[in-house]
Length: 447
Image (cartoon, rainbow, N blue to C red):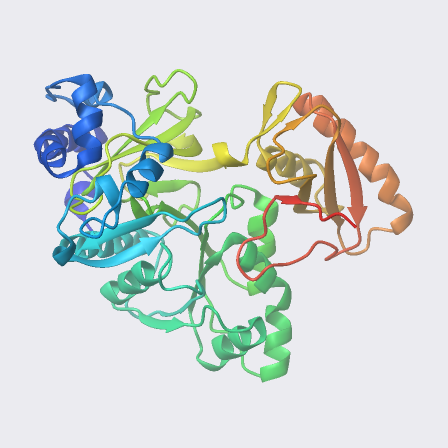
């Protein structure tokens, strides 16, 4: 029998959930207009919009990341979070920041009510993905102030699990303490989960302590849609409870998570956020149906300090299904890439994850599903020549075969994607490993 965190919404027909959400959005829009200078301006451009059904939400304006950056820049001492600060400073109890890896970080203020809302939504997400009160969970996000830091920790405590915050410690200590504390669950980025899977057995030999690990939640980047990556983490960590999770600090840090079916992430923030799927080029809504692809768009209707209306996430998703054996009615999807990560080869859009998918699907047992695409400088997006790609050989692949398999991968990508790449096959573990995320695209330092 399936356990639910919020059974009244998780099992309600999705069309009924959307009808209820439309009412919530209709009530929230006037409140947002009155409290946010950003939305007073954006909503003035569209005029009054009557929302009687979910489809009417499409008549509201999109919010882009640039809007949030400009709004934050329009700040003052009374409103340090800028034009979308929709609550008085005295009511704001915390800020969460973006990583700032692509420029100035954004700060998202939250009130006490926002914290409670986030905690409940993220707890539902983790509960869907298998975390229970009896778990001892190793939380490996290092910084409390980012989206996956303190908000995730509060959600684990809300479930009642024992929080073991090991993020930020050296990897050797993380592995040792996970064994010593008999942690049963783990939260990490997909990259770090892969890295830990390569060293977990060694930690067992060093400590002499048998593994208690049973559940692993990974997210922060695409990857778990590939069976080869899932298999590597599951076998390396000796678990069969691997689940993918995803969220956005701009909206709610945890909104999507896999159930026991482990085939696509359910939307688990339906109590607080309305989600749409749109065509990223036309902006038109795409129906939720198996196989459909599009960009995820979010509208918050229970957010005090930093509300969002039709926020374009730049996350591109593919719908796995709209039904599930677990009984949850929200759509299941996989994130297939981000607009920010997209490259252009002679006018053709290329997701780095698509190249990795070819590696994983065509060369199992010969090449690891790990790669690095190299750019000459950080602003390089367009390639007119073959895109440089480094991949790792699997253990046991003779070095003499590296040139032939490099050529075979180049031909496979050209055949399937009409894109030219220039492949270098490295020895096993030849790519650098990071303690947080391992980017698929990096800038090659000049020598």
